[in-house]
Image 1 (cartoon, rainbow, N blue to C red):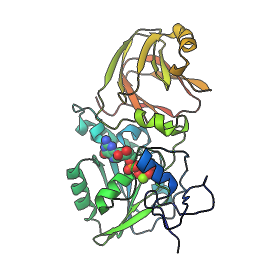
Image 2 (cartoon, helix red, strand yellow):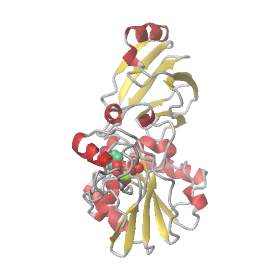
Image 3 (spheres, protein in one colour):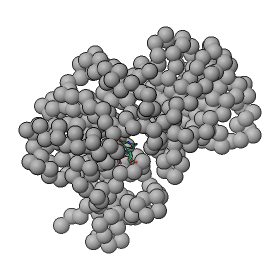
Length: 337
Ligand SMILES: Nc1nc2c(ncn2[C@@H]2O[C@H](COP(=O)(O)OP(=O)(O)OP(=O)(O)O)[C@@H](O)[C@H]2O)c(=O)[nH]1
Ligand SMILES: [Mg+2]
């Protein structure tokens, strides 16, 4: 009989310590990797989950995205490969947004975006997996579908396993900020429906590619974000310590940054960056960086930094970013004020 890890779902094996699912004794319930993560908060390897397995036909696909990944919400066109499923979009982790965020406006803009992109959907739901009331509502909502299968799909770290655990009363599957944690699907019956927690869809250029877990876990926000506002003159720059730099090229402007409080920010002048880095290489410590410039139009704009946060700005301008080579950085319309 094959055994799977109760934390990440990986097939357990005793052959290769460097590979996913390794255990010393096949009777152990958790693979070594999950055991270390649970007990010591440590990760020594990153395993990419397998590609998405075939989905059953008669199903609801719940496409989950964190508010930190809203730029990617409609970027995985699963509906093109699986046109017969019913699609429900969940925007999770809304508790990370500042209290004053206008969620009605956010939803309205997302609906408009879905319509413009002709995305088929049944519903778009804003929720927090940390809010028991939202979970109870989701449970009731999913039970209104007659489909016997419900798949939780979406980018890594969007909260699929957190939702799955709450829906199915599972206490063993692991939900941590470690990207790509779930390796193989978990499933459990709730009423007449089978709920499936799927491995996260892999996104190139996210933070785990550049930093070890011990470092990046602090940089991914886990609590309500307090926006930080910077007035930036032309020629000034912000260095987000250990991550990237933002250079203001054209005109005096203001930037609102939505980031973990652990991201330290240094304001300087663009021409001072090089000297600063000589003095303190930990400001931008990686081997290779690239520069990426964005023209900002008149509309309020969001620039998303990988999976760690984003900024809003609303003045015609050019911002140039020094980012780790191939870090994911996108410009979109801002979805809220
Ligand atoms: N603040 C907040 N954190 C959340 C919420 N949902 C999930 N998280 C946290 O986000 C992190 C990732 O959650 P997971 O449930 O493991 O995400 P996942 O989508 O299963 O990730 P993969 O298995 O890697 O694809 C964990 O630290 C969760 O505690 C939420 O609604 N609010
Ligand atoms: Mg998971």
